[in-house]
Structures are given as C-alpha cells and as structure tokens.
Length: 396
Image 1 (cartoon, rainbow, N blue to C red):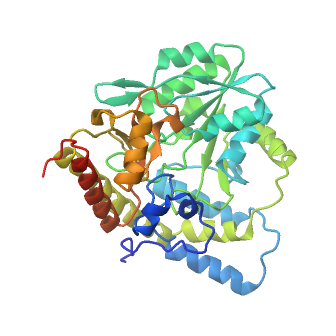
Image 2 (image 1 turned 90 degrees about the vertical axis):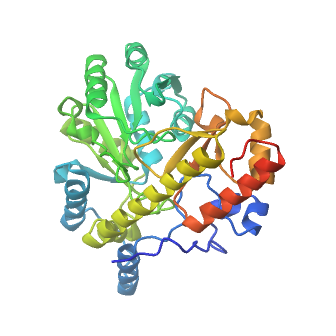
C-alpha cells in the first residue's frame, strides 16, 4: 500500500500552533517550520476512517477503556515493540506531561526533586516547577562522537534524599539517542537501590532506524518502580490530542497512580481518542507507521549527507530514534542569538534553539525532519544561498 508523504499539509484556518508560530517570512515562502516535533504529514488513513465512523454513529459520549481498546494496545506493543504486556498494565490518561504531573503529585512533596538528563525536553522541568518541585540535572556525556549517560553522576543524584523521580526519555529528545538494555538495566538497578521512581517517556519508541528501542518494562529489574508513557502523538501526528496510555506492571504502584490520576480530574477517554487508538493500533496503522519510518529515515540520511557534503561547518549528532536531528552550528562563528537571526531571517530555516533543551554547548539546534522531501530540499537551497552570502564555507 502506498501512502502520500510528499504533499505538505495545509494548516490554514486550523488554529495550528505550528502554523501560528512559524515566522511569517518562512510561511510566505511556502516552507514549513522545522521547530517543534510535529510532522507535516496527515494522520494515517486508518485513523481518519475510524474517526469518521465514530462521527457517523452520532455517539461521542462517555467512553471507557474496554477489552477492545486494551487488546489493540497489547497487540501493538507485542507486534511493533516486541513487548508482552498485561491488560491490567494499561491506564489511559490525558497526555504525557499530564501523566508526569500526576506522578509528581503522587510521589513528591513541594520542595523535593525530579532528575532530568540534559539536553532534554524542557516541559519535564516545567511541570515540576509549576508544581513547586525542583529539578536536578545529570547532564549527558558527549564522548567519541555520541551521547552517553553519566551513570556515576546519576547515582550521586539518586542517593540524595530529596530525589524522588527520574524522568527517562527513550528515544531521547532532542538527541535521538536510543538507550540500550545494558544502560536501562543499570538505571533500573540504581532506581531500586535508592527507591527512585522512573517515569519513562517512550512516545518516540515506535520510530527507530537501524536499531530497536527496548521498552523499560522489558527490563526485569525495572517493573517494581516503572511508570512508562506511550502515545499516538509522535508516531501518528496526533500531537494535539490530549491522550496517552501509561503502562505500570506493579499493582500497588498502578493503584497509587490511578488514585492520583482520578484526583487530578480525569474522567473518561475522549471518544475520538478511543477511536484513534483502535484505528492506529491495527494492521493498517502498522503499515502506515512502517512507511512513515522509511520515509523519515531517508530524509534523515539526506540531511546528514547534505550537511557533510555541502555545509561542513554543521555537524549532526548520531541518532537511532525519532524524526529529530540534534545539530551543532558552532562552526559558523556566530553567537547563539546571531545564529537564530541568521537562520530565521536569511536562511528561512526555523529550528528549535538548543537553549530550550538546556544544552551545555552554544549554537545547538533541533530539527524536525518529518516533512515532504521537496520542502527539505528547498530549505537546504535557501540555507546554502544565505551561507554563501555570509561568506561561510559552502562546498558546491
């Protein structure tokens, strides 16, 4: 089955945040923003059909997590993630950050801390700050051209009495690093030793290139303290749908989470989210996902080769998962603010600046590659032209 990833979605009049936040000059040039982590592809046809069918029933009423829903989630995790889960592990929620906020309320008191590992998605810390909690940083190490986890630093932070939650992201956002079983096992051992909950964000885990992303719940030592979040948002471009599925293997931990989730005013599943899950977690959804991953993998390969062959002052961190690229522009000789102005106003290239992810190095930027290839090619043409105008080294 062939899917269309070459047509740029039309966001006009949809209230799209990505469209509204895109600088006007870039939008007027007919180019998308590569900031944020939202595809420029429409959702999978199987999801569209499921939503249409639901609308035709005329019954968007209160909706519960029934056997059909749980079976769809289990089927997906087994066939696409190679992870066997039980029905009792599946807990619907209102979203990834909603779920993290629930865990923070459940497991911490004001003034206590969560641990993150920068460069990292900024909304984890934002959730903690809004709830009056602190964030401790265990920075990733840049060694031999790749990011690794500082396990000694992590242990030191976990040993602190105020440390209650480690936020783990796999594949990691923004770097695209996929944590392997060995690293996850070590994390699980430390978490058990110091009685730290691990909230593992796996919303990009369906999207991997030359590797697989092991689920944190596949680590035997992890199940007593793990709260794993999965979602349709990144895999199927449903980022605006406030919905996720949390997976918890430990019964007592699951009961605590459900009690706090309900106290946070959770009612029932959005009926459109319910139908979307059934449409996505199906054979048709899997076919679309696999085709999307192939397309995005080619896009990533193209961008890497383009920078290497034509713009050697830009380097790209290796990544195994997600459709995000973590790029280093320090070779351009600009300050971070100068780089942002150059990219937006001269190169017409809208990226997420590295400081948003607490990057330790200046002039880093995150690029979303889930866009039609012809858009990426035009953007690279604009970039080369602007770089030449600035006297930067450009190889024809």
